[in-house]
Length: 46
Image 1 (cartoon, helix red, strand yellow):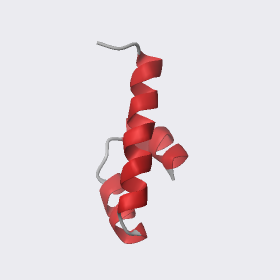
Image 2 (image 1 turned 120 degrees about the horizontal axis):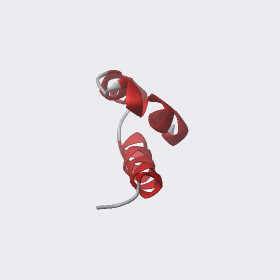
Image 3 (image 1 turned 90 degrees about the horizontal axis):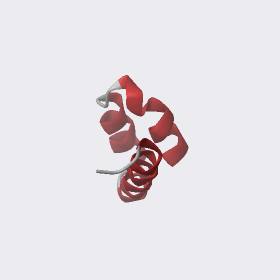
Image 4 (image 1 turned 180 degrees about the vertical axis):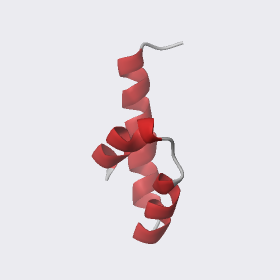
């Protein structure tokens, strides 16, 4: 396992990579389906 701060860093990296790979519409569609806990992390990845 990893500590929460490291997990958040990894999540931000994955989301940032996805953000670069999809269209703005796809990004909005995808992030709209994530749990609320991801909102702060996905916002930083945009």
